Length: 383
Ligand SMILES: NC(=O)c1ccc[n+]([C@@H]2O[C@H](COP(=O)([O-])OP(=O)(O)OC[C@H]3O[C@@H](n4cnc5c(N)ncnc54)[C@H](O)[C@@H]3O)[C@@H](O)[C@H]2O)c1
Image (cartoon, rainbow, N blue to C red; front, side):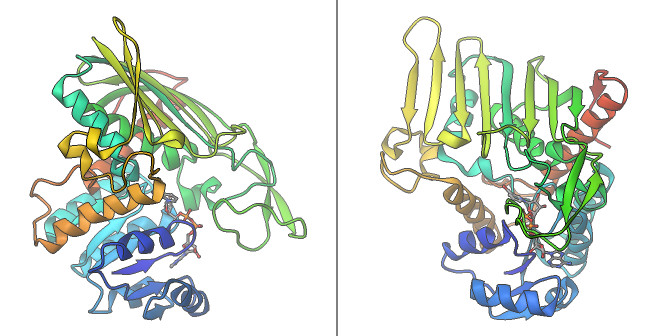
């Protein structure tokens, strides 16, 4: 594999892939030769390239991981596809639904394997919830509710490329973390989001942008010079949602919610029972009942369904985490590639494709359209 962009999440791609034991970390491409060399040394990659084009020319790189800021997702993914490489792109797949659609078409035509890192799918209790719903354990789902809240952009000295539309896209919180929630809700329930009504807010319309670069989640340095800039993208949003089976739902996203670090929660209420999973307590699945006591299923492979058990690697009481779910994702994707399967073959469940990434792009765009129309109900147009 070769990786383009090794800031916050890139090294986690490498870590996850290393756990498989049969993938060589060939190269890192950075924004300059010096930064690529530094990252390659830190990650133990064999080669360092000053540009993604140079990495794509390396015949030893068969799978390209794209962990660059959002504005580079389209060009890097498209160039990798053109070279016939398999592509694992971080989310959001592209800056717009139109770009997402083009990538899906290019990848399909090229016959490469394409994946997007909607990594919460890799959690064993997420798979357990999905199987329980599919089996009918909660009856017919009629309400999906949740949130994805963080606090790393709470202060006006907090800054990221995610706040600049030319680098992050027209949306900040919705594209960055709302896309995860929408994929998770659809994946767990097996339903599709068809209509949305969005209310979006920029809580901090002015921020202090540091002069020089800063990687994601890094705190401001007291000595760093800054300039005050206007912020146009949302850092908070609430969305009403309709699903294709008639179910209703709502979720909120925020990057300015103190105390919430990476707090993604989904609850699915059905005609007989409810299920709730929360990323910050990911080893527990809450099961709500009307006519008997509620339950909490603590992750324990011996208590999980067969389909979910393969996503758990440790016995009960041994906590699994974000990085383990990420590694599960890579196991599903690389297992598929190693078996020589075609992109159109059935996928293991933790493996989200460019089609899923494109769908998430469409949903976020529909929410922004809804907000522009004064929070009108808006159909999600899959172009
Ligand atoms: N799946 C997840 O849970 C998850 C988590 C975090 C981030 N992400 C996604 O991953 C991507 C990266 O986010 P991040 O938080 O790691 O950002 P980051 O800013 O920490 O890292 C981005 C890296 O890309 C490098 N880069 C910039 N231009 C480059 C170029 N032309 N060639 C090569 N490298 C270049 C930067 O120097 C930096 O090291 C984003 O699209 C984000 O949405 C996903």
